[in-house]
Length: 380
Image (cartoon, rainbow, N blue to C red; front, side):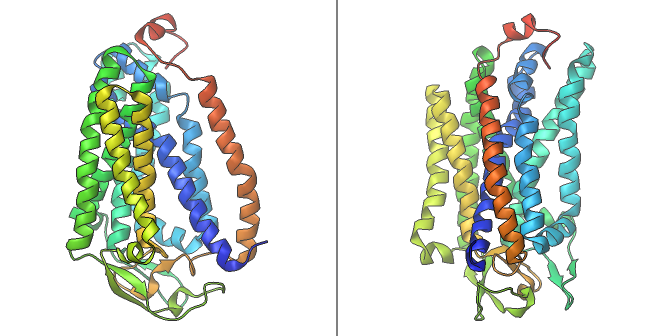
């Protein structure tokens, strides 16, 4: 169907699309849950926030599951190295995500105030922890992950959970958390009214400003802070099956900025991120919820593309053995596997997209406290 080199590039793009789809859809779920205890001042107001996201969260989660499955099938070495190196971080995310469905289903089963407030803070944790950890993980990819392969391609990790929480990793976590809280705030602006919408508007303005400072600060840190990216220095044929250990890699890419000089059009990505956040900030200030949501969506797309373009062709750089660094060219499955997966993706990704759009169309509209009072037993 496609030659091997083209398939490798196609799957790099498709995994990126799945991650962006997850961040755009489940991102506002996470952000709205993180904001809920603050924009909802009483039980009914918090139920309003929950009812804007609870009907959609499980459908949105499909993007994450699909991205994980694609990572396992398309880049098995990346999957193996990441799930060993980031084991405790991913386990923390998993347990935080457990709280969401349980919280949505059980929070309103009892009218006890302490019961409901406990679940509210549980949902808050379920929104904040994944948002923060995902950003920390991306920050550590830019710093390099302390893993290496032996001569039988068995990976070993030589770091710890606490090493992930470096200053730059935490800054990347702030970028992610503020970005998704901005997205959640603009979502709540669209789906609520009155006091909740006004508080969500203020939250969106705050987190748009925090995101801009953190995103630009991370870029400056990469450029001027002595963080060296990697460059493949040996000759290779990207159209063949490669052994990850057959290449030589040097840390000669200042701040992972080389691709922006080599491919000038890639500078569009960080520009889109910054312009999107400015659009969200200005639109939220003016009370234009849909434009604000468009702006936060652009910020997400720009941010993820910025990281992807900077790292390319690296997918998971190694900080202790650059030759073990995994790239688009040598971390992939066989040509036949990628072809079969491409057919499956061509069928199921549009189905997921159509299903998601249909659900939003059918359940669209503002959720109000009056709506909660009128449907006490049928809502979350």
